[in-house]
Structures are given as C-alpha cells and as structure tokens.
Amino acid sequence: AGDSTEIGEKGINLSGGQKQRVSLARAVYHDADVYLLDDPLSAVDSHVGKHIFDNVIGPQGQLKNKTRVLVTHGVTFLHQVDVIVVMKGGEISEMGTFKELLAKKGEFSDFLVQHIVETEQSELDAEIKELINEDTALSQTIQRKLSTKGSSDSVKSTSSGGRYRNEMEFDSKVTNKDKLIQVEKTETGKVELGVYIHYLRSVGMFLGLSAVVFQILSQAANALSSVWLSKWTSDTTAAVNGIQVVDKRNSYIEVYAAFGIGQAVSAVLCSFALAFGSIRASRVLHESMLANVLRAPMSFFDTTPTGRLVNRFGKDVNVVDGILAMTIAQA
Image 1: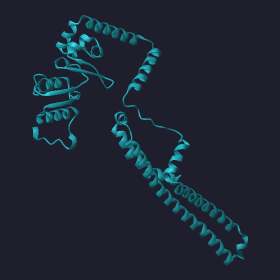
Image 2 (image 1 turned 30 degrees about the vertical axis):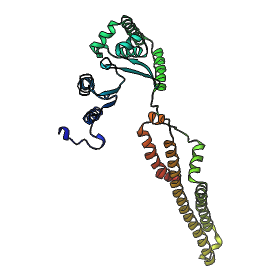
Image 3 (image 1 turned 90 degrees about the horizontal axis):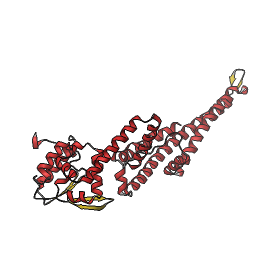
Image 4 (image 1 turned 180 degrees about the vertical axis):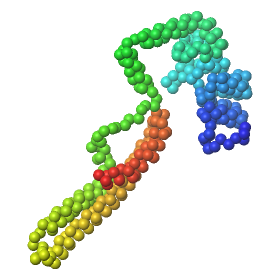
C-alpha cells in the first residue's frame, strides 16, 4: 500500500491521471534544476489539477525555486505564470505576461476569447475574470461572441430538418478534414486485378505458375479418370461370354491407376507450391511493409495509431501466412 504499491509493468494497472501523477512525483523527487512539463494536468480532473498546480508547479508550490517550462492548452493557470510563450505554426507568436498579452490584442487574446466562448465561463478562475473585466474592449468582444453563439444555437434548433442535416453534413466534413487521426481506408467488394498481380509477384513467378500448372494437371487427371472409367464400363469387347479379357482389363486398370497417381502427385506438388509461395509472399510483404514504416516521416506516426500498425504486422500478416493460402487451395 502507499508508496510500496506494485503498479506493474509500464503502469498497466494505473489510469491515465494516475500515470501523470506518478511521473510528476518522480520528476519532483529527482530534484532537478530545470523541469520540462508536457501538459501534466491534461489527464486529471479540474480540482486535482488545481491542487497539483498550487502545491507543486505553481508560484507557491514545491518547485517554486526551480525553472519550470509548462506546456499546456488550457488557460486556467496562465495568469499565475511568469512568462507566457504563444506558439503558432511551430514558431513563437507572442511572449509576455498575462496582462501584457491581453493588452496586445494578438493571438493570445483571440485564443482566450475563443476558449471562453466554447467553454463555460464558470470554469474560469475569479482572477482571470477580473483581469478580463478590466479590459472593456475585450469584455465587450466576449459578450458579443457569446450573444452571437446563443442566437446561432437558437436558429439551429428551430431550423428545418433538411437544412439542419445539410449543416451537420458540412460541419462533419470540415471536422473530418481537420482531424489529426483520419479513419482508416478500406476497400470492400470486388478485388481489383492489381491486388492479384501484386500478390503473384510476391509469391514469385516460378512458384505461382507451378501452382497453377499442377492444379490444372490435377483437375485434368481427375476429369480424364472419370472419362476413362466411363469408357471402361461401356466397352463391350472387354468380356467374351461373360468372361473378362485379362489383357484389356489390365490395360484399363493401369491407365486408370496412372490417372489417379497423376492426380495425387499433382495435388501434392500444387500444395507444396502454394505453401512455399505463401511463405515467400508473407516474407516479401512483411519486409516491404517494414521498410516503408521505417522510412515513414514522423508525421505518419503522429496521425497513425499504434494499434493500427500492430494489426497490420500481426493480424494481416497471419492472414497472408495461413488463411489466404488455405483459401486459394480450396478455391
């Protein structure tokens, strides 16, 4: 219990907020001179975040005599920090104290207005409200935007169904375009010819053609054996006075057995070609996929969930290894 609690590998039995607090506690325990805090309050509740800021990060907290660089998208505690650096497009847009940035009427002021309009005003700290009220122009801008938002919400709620659906469709398109992580593209229905060609190239022309040839030979031997058996049963010269002619009977048996052996051998060779071909295709596709991932830019990993990559290297490779080969063999 307490600080002796076993939390498991990589904090497997901890929630996101607990992981944030444990990481912050380890950093504070290290007693460093400079602390880089990457949004440590994002995964905790508002009252917990206030407690952490007041007692650890803030000007009266345990790290008050340390250099702290706090990255955050919230505005709750910004009025308590020494210097605010506003970033836009990977560059520094503005820098100064809370009051100085409000007076500039720049990016920070616009961000603050947008935040207040989109969230509940009750979430703001009393000191922030007081600072905003001191700026008459900013206060009027906020009130005007809040009034406009309220009017637009009222109009939306009373608009016709068709128009409302059109607005929703437009908003969803814009939202999807602006999303960092896009929905994974999948193809359904008929498989394109290019997919078969790509898989055949991965299998290898020799193994691919060998599998096709042996499959044709196996089916041909099966069909010819049926034709030969039909000819045997309809041959009236194979027996004289009810007694079968030994030479003809043996010749029919030998040819029929040859067709059966040929069918079996062709089927086995076809299975071997498919097995080795599927293994080669899986290896080639895996190496190609791995090479593409290793050469991908960092933006790819920012927009692609880890689980999606794991599925490609796990589930999909398993399908190519076993299920796809069995499906082709049974086709």
